[in-house]
Length: 404
Image (tube, rainbow, N blue to C red; front, side):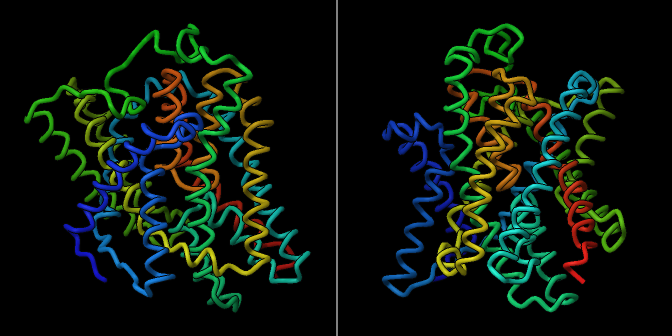
């Protein structure tokens, strides 16, 4: 069953509506702060899985809009990045980056150790480590091809995609429960009224942390913002093509984000700041639709077909993420409300992807209050620095004698 592009858009919209209804109707989803696109997307993925398994019918969605939506979201993250504000969060950003990089190393150590314990190629340990988890589908597929071509590892790309799919699902599920657990440590009202904790005492109606807030805008501001996003997409894609195959190669969405940062801060210097309300509106819509499409198109049967060693590695990685988030990320980032939101975001991109991290944080701040610091730091680390750090980490691990 082939669903064309408009049909896919209709289904994605319905997934978001179902997610809203589920979170409103099911107390456990609200209690564990599960993002609406994740709730609706998993239901859709289960329906597709049921059709595949019991009706022997595969639903194939036209996902041609998925990549542009993701890149548009990253463009809005870039357009929302004020470098002057980033200076104030600099020390926190550096500390958070150190915490994130340490997890990359631990993920690979754990993956390789378990792969060797099961007697399988240690490259599967890397695929079940930072390659596919912190790296996501794009990085996983790219390294999977490298492992097949240069190391002779069969089915590496398929394993990488399956691992990344597992991470995307678990990253969206774990952030809320971990945040809920941590809120008990600091007090449930910490986000709402603690001065300086990023609470609701200083509301910002244009922030990404308020996806349901009304965003007052005008046709002119909306069109201007669309123009900036289109420029970010076009220039970012061209830049990605120029550096492809070089030591500076980065995913297209990182280049798009970088162009957005340059545009926003360049316009601010000449007294023409971007329309923050329009940026937030388009960014939140792009994020919601991207996540809905990403989750409803999951091939859950690929996860069901994972060999026992790889599935065990992924289960261990999930446990590592929870333990690390609670005992390392939360404490290292200050053990306060901002640390709770940062930790929820870390669960999202530590196992899944940046959009999952933002959705996790939005779900937490919608319930407990603002955390401007988290929304300043996480997008820059998760969407920019982590790809560079992960590439270096993977290459260093491949230099180990066990891979030669």
